[in-house]
Length: 38
Length: 356
Image (cartoon, rainbow over all chains, first blue to last red; front, side, top):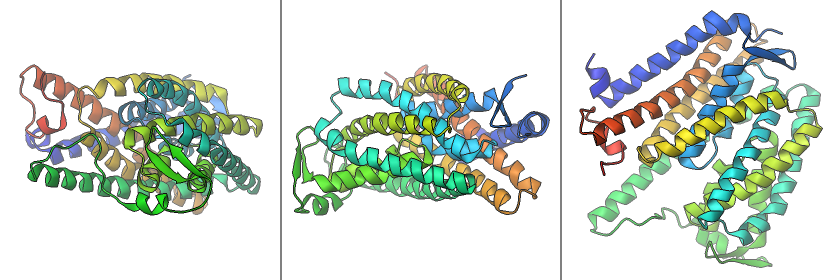
């Protein structure tokens, strides 16, 4: 776990996972029903 | 509850504010827009292509006025260069808006805009990568030779060729210290104006490198002069897009709110984070945005039947914005901790501004 903070590559991967995961959750839980519908 | 309808599409307010905020951070930090991300992002979020371009152009015009005033105070504007380019820029914007309206009439505006954005963002990714590496190498060479690294670092000699083109009239730009044929400047104006009018962007990402590499102006003069052109291209583009029914003012309003907050934060962040760090982050976020736009393009081209393409397009585009914001915010937090003498990861110190 420490590697995700102490290594720049690890930190990038961690942030990328958080960002993409949040984006996927927002899409599935909210946007799919609330938006993109005519 | 938190959405409203634009051209038949339910548009969540937070997406518009987040898009504005992300572009605001990039603009506030680097000085050059980030509008090239907005049009494809809005299309990915479900906006019609022509509307995405119109909203982008309108929100950019407001931002550029504020930034130009600041650059004028700093003496970063070459008015001779700016006014010489204005005619070409306006002609280019007019051509760009006409081209957009033509694709709108054919019903292919979204596809064409996405395809152009994918190409532009991919080349920008390559350019940022090559340029940052080249600048690093040059800095190391200068430092190894025991010389002082000045404010400006010339890595190209291409401008000597363009400055020698003997096409009259020749303009003398005193602030930029450049003597060049008017036609070279006008042609740059037309090309960047065309992109601005069509994609709804400010065009700074093409204009600034053109002024630096083709004309030979310094980077800070190029950024200041470019902002004057964005006021013209954004203002004229916004007017023409509004006349064509491509703008929704509610969407513009929410984006400007996000952009204002983002720009303030971006400006504050410059005191904590070094420029090269942001350029790298921007470069990698560009490849995510390109992937998002490419997936949406594939989704549209395959008849909007393969649902996972649309899903991943949103995940990449929204994820890229969150990634960019999270990285900058966390670097500011690390920088504050570093200044207070607290422990930070070993890779952080070279990227943040040293303690006072």
